[in-house]
Image 1 (tube, helix red, strand yellow):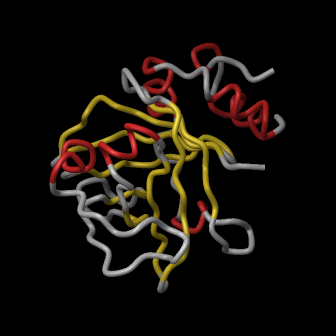
Image 2: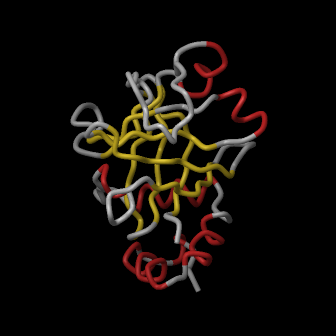
Length: 185
């Protein structure tokens, strides 16, 4: 059983997450609430990842399941691919969330700026092209897409070999929103 992060150390949690099946990890992640995500983000300080962490072991495209702390549209996914030497991604949504926010293309990179050497999903970056399997490029800084992704960077920390926690920043300020991603099987 995967313990609550309130009742254990990060080392104990990581051991349990790594021992769990992909289905168990996903089910556990789907129960996370904002207060738990806040605690996980604090626990994972200094637990960095590289952009390649989000690809398959062979370096191929990979889609991770996600859970966020927002009031609505909590379950989503993020797809990642190596395109022209960069790890690019987009948000996989459906229905009104996809229409309103668009794909939210981003670059997965080490920040080296206000967030130190932590990995970020950078929505400020504007791609010239995307992998053929990705949706068409759309600006993150116009229309309703700007309300979702405009000025956004997500700071990413590793919880285990298959789970991350992230905190959203808009224009350099913490949004008070978090999400977790779980690697597929």
